[in-house]
Length: 316
Ligand code: UDP
Ligand code: MG
Image (cartoon, rainbow, N blue to C red; front, side, top):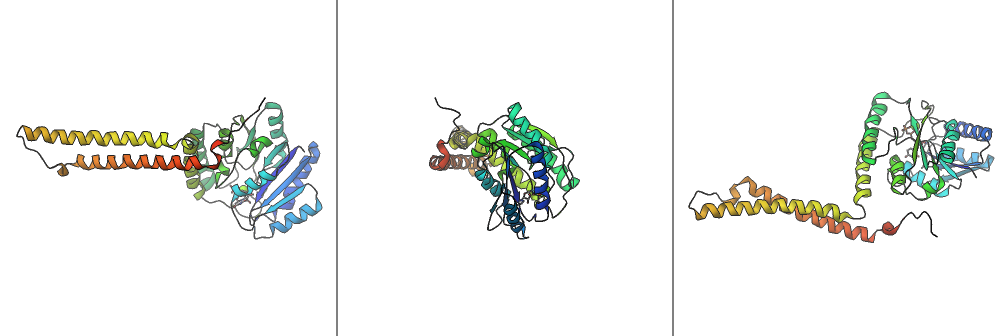
């Protein structure tokens, strides 16, 4: 099979029949063999009934239905696990992404050797103030932190070589950073294609402004994990040593100054009367705490399930 199209959906009942018809039309036109995997993320508007009737009418339609709403990442995770096509495409269910972009993305993977091609909503049809502007800032930060030069990291429309989706684990709200997950799993050939974007026709957006705060926090966790996740002590130990050294030098200084003054009969203050004393105290305590965090981190990563998961390309 050429394509698996994975579609996470949460309360998108009205859009689904139109979306499927559109996909089918493009696929037949281009002669792709394909399956569509609808992942219903706990919808309460009858979306699952629509998926069920589509699956009854078309053998290439599959559905997965969650008992409750877990989020887009969870839906993608299940969709990726089920996908069987040579190339896996994800798109939103709300008709904002156009299936007509798929053939060109597939061509880029097949002929230009990309592992992953991400859409770029160059002319975005969402609210300028609450979505488009924050999104620009957010993408700038994501580019800086990940080193991946995408304009639109979080675009729902993406195409992957099957191997990629089988070797990454989307969890929490990490669907925003799949290209980064892919890069960390060893798939660094990441391309971009400007795509048409439509206004939402039915239903409402499922993400508010808090996405940007959460998105930035997730970005910080991810870049920390990818650098230090397997060797936390190198991070915490280094900062712990530095902190401890700073505290130590201050302490020695405070004591030395006092002793010298004392022995030469000069005026001197009680150490607790000096601001430096408290700074030294804080630095020493912080240093020890950083070390403790490092040891705890090592104990956790030593027991982590994936501590020896490597993405082996080939064995001879
Ligand atoms: N979605 C989902 N689970 C959720 C929230 C959203 O599966 O908890 C789906 C949603 O149905 C849509 C896609 O993720 O297919 C993108 O959501 P939305 O269109 O609301 O995001 P926006 O386009 O506003 O960024
Ligand atoms: Mg949308």
